[in-house]
Image (cartoon, rainbow, N blue to C red):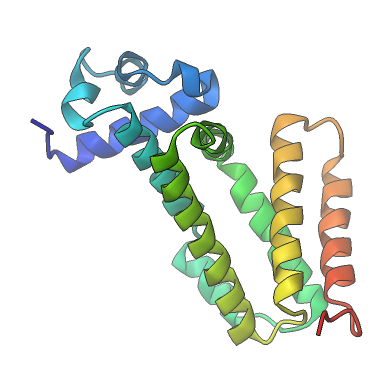
Length: 196
């Protein structure tokens, strides 16, 4: 029987994210999650049908936590619509995502695991497509410079910049990363660069 205590389930999912980030997908066991959450042995197995269920719920939770809060969305809506403001927003995005280090590292583990688990791959594919579609829709409504191709290129570029920052932070200084985000926005949204 799968338990329904919402707070306990949420704590176990958060613990699973920490385990994924710290020990990798191979280290994600019910026992490891129980230990990380500080609950009695056997608790996680009462809340999740199997390991795939735990992996899937951890992935969904990472995406929930990576979404901007209402204050950030309001600030973005009130901001200017020029390339400089767009670069500021993209630097804030990189900072916000990078601040959830364990979540992003867990997501990388989940992506690798998804190459071997079709159900997880389907969930992550749906989540990434929805995220990208939301970015494209927001960009289209916002009036920021650049076309859909620029948004996709920024999405991919900034994701890899975040990977670099979280896994090999000594490669680039914080100033270099900020300059690169600005350069990416400027180059990808430059007038005359449109793919049409």
